[in-house]
Image (tube, helix red, strand yellow):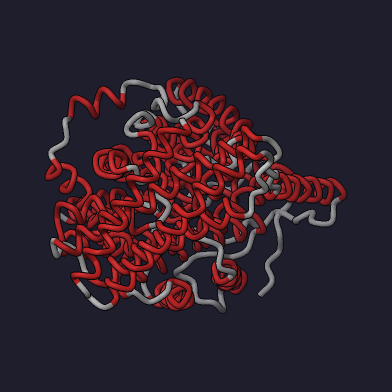
Length: 409
Length: 186
């Protein structure tokens, strides 16, 4: 019974914790501009995320050590530093975007300008990181994040022509009014949203925090292989809602309020309250995850003691990195940069840096010295190699496409 | 307080996972932060990041008639998006579908977006007399859209149903005019 409870909660957490401001914005922007023509990117990104998250979970459950710890040890300080710089910068940008996203969601609920909410959101994040246990923290926001299921309900209530949506999804071509460069640019942003590096880093380091052993591997795999796809399904629902309501109206999403419009149009005030709750939970959860991930990455690389469970006097540098990242994130958002724009840029830079994050994990997961018989199977290696080629292609194309399309204009 | 860093080289006979406490630092490494290779790698990475930021921060001027026309077309598309958002917000208010702060914030964001779009087009230098004509036609449409969205925000703030209805009418008119121009430009 206890196992069942743990499994259910883990699954819910994986679903609710999958979506962050990047997924909310990217899926809605894409749905409103390209309909369902980029829906194929979600499963492609999802399979990659599942593949590398499972590898990372396997490494953690077998070795009991964090990913960056092993990457530096296995690949040396140079590769480790490149890995760290890429992961930290992207994770920091994501962290700042989540803080901004949470402030935007609170603005929607209160009418008070989001910049006034940024420090409040950061303080709330800090208090939870300081006071709440890892397990309770993870499950609370994960379950609250399930409020985003409201997009699935709204889609059902909208009663779209499912055949047209499917036909659109299978077209694999941009709509007539959009060019291929912009279409590919958003494909990369959507891919970056699905494969955000902090997800893998948090999942593996969280495993260390929760003291995973080989016996926990089965539960972790179920959460990865069932929870994440359900989260991906929610992403598609957000995209479809935008495709059904916003695209025909000629609305191209540029604000969080527009993301909620399809839900409001069919579910009214109750739907609005639920969707704003979902926005807050998703961005808040992602703030916690990305903030912790930034500190995990730095601490594991430098070999400092780390862990949310450890008090500041026992892991001073770990807590210092969290505090500095939080402060820097707040200052970054208080410059007045549009959080949605920051999110979009973070997704593209994330896509550009993907190989630096995932290649080392792939190498470590093939090291018998660490994993013994639990190294990657032949199938995992074939799939992983294909994904690494894809990640490199995405990485090379991301920034030139951003420049060429003027960031998707 | 300060931990000893572990050597970065891979060591044989590594301890098994079970022997390591979860959050303990590996005790065999020294971080070669002062190594020249590391410094070089860091400078290279920093240079790349700065180059990317510089490249993406560059905004090209509008040197030709074609690119001015493209900018006008993009302005119309973006304005139509903001105006359509305003129309949906007004409709949600009429049907009592949403709470005041949400409607006001969303309308305010649409107004801000429209104003930014109008300003961006406004500063473009028209390269030809034909471009002057296009500018003379589009600029009032920009102003109309921004003003209608501002009216909507003000009416929503006052919970003034008649004011919202009037703003919705203006937005519909603005949308029609922009759609007409879009048809001519494309």
